[in-house]
Image (cartoon, rainbow, N blue to C red; front, top):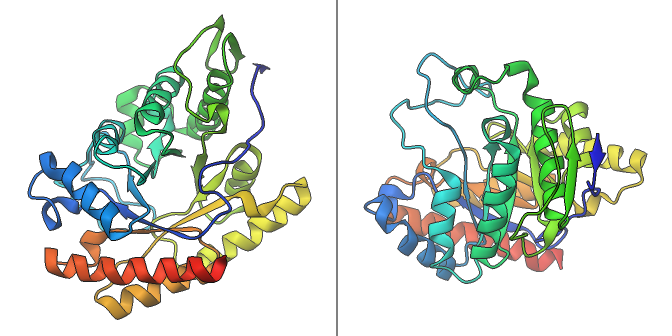
Length: 313
């Protein structure tokens, strides 16, 4: 492979205080009566002290497919387009950050992905973080005409293409699936090639080696408990030591396992932060059954994470 492809560099919130993220899926109907009201809900969450909003990605739900983490799936669940939704929410907020948690890299053309992310980052004022995953639902790959066993290689090449495009024009890239350039592309992300890219995977050496070599953070499986996060953090530090890279610059993104009540959410978030997570995502629909309960859970979550941030400083 040739081209202007810089090493991962970090940026955004990486290495700073712990942060609370909330999944966008589930905000309807808890805090918004319709998709149209999501921008107002995002502004409300920002006023409550939430740090980030996160949205995952699927083209469709296959009722014949089982989640590898044994997470129950509702085939009728609403699955929004993350880049479109985040663009809409960014215009109604000031400081709230946004992340994909993550996009299935193989289902995007890398140049289209680089263009969309750069545009979105400009629209948000530099508040976007790109999360990429290899994917697990084989029927989506079949529909896209992408061999399932190429998903990890294509994810890495997507990262490399984005870094090359965002490094400035003219850029060139030569990889396994794409050759382009010299070519020009504007706009660039506000931080250029420093826009944070987080990679999904298990708490395994191959997955975390990809993070250390190509990424700025690790997106753990939604099914990962605090013990798994701790195992992953230990392994990540080992890999960083072997590579001569500072482990402190990597974001560790975890998802709080479903529970109920204020006491449970405080305990759950604390356990993930103690295990090494820097960003804990709250799937609000799994923690509350009404808008009133959702606000109580959020208040407890915000105070727990921000108190951890004061200790962290």
